[in-house]
Length: 312
Image (cartoon, rainbow, N blue to C red; front, side):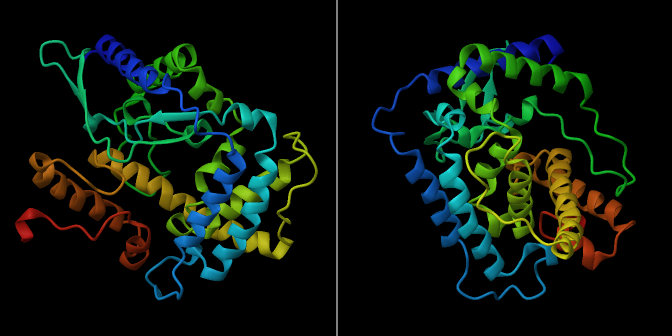
């Protein structure tokens, strides 16, 4: 598609978002505090009773006891945050498609600016708008590559993605104010709601960093009282910085790999693209292998060890 068609298609998708967001759910949203507490319960429910991962997970993932400690503090932090009027304004219940990415959007063959169908609705749900504060569909997102750990050239995304991103944000601001209210939240606040229930999946380090950022900026953010999370000691901060640096790289790597291979975050690809994607996956893995030991790379690589079709 040309740039003009991409922007026009972005506008058409926003109209779908507007239709979803326009539905009022009067039976929901009356107790945002209970919703936040339930988020922490979800995080706790994901913790295994016994840690059997051994050396399979990287060091930054954290022990079960540390996950539980962070989740307990997160419950107290959530109960404070949800009292803030700014967060209350971004707590309106909203129905949204949780996976509004290119692979789920069909357009007309004659006119690619016309959206004919959107699929993969099974995970759609009603949530407070602040749960969508950091969500930008892939057709409107620019994914940079992770620093200098790979010899490949930058992805050719550039200005088109930036313009689609600007068009998407402007359209949501004008047509979907309920959702845009969540985008006006401070990034550190939005990150807390994004990660407070995902600690065991993403690693303890990211929730610890989110809590540290909130504690350091509590007064700057004009939150009432004091932050319930106590800042770590200088020695603990030093250890955390080393772990978090590795965790950040793993996250950047996953974004880059999924963007480069044009896959879902779980590695899903259409059947007609499976052979080509499998071979590309092997080539990309081998590129990174030139700069990292395989044991270290396996711990941060987002998917299973790749193979080429010719090896089968």
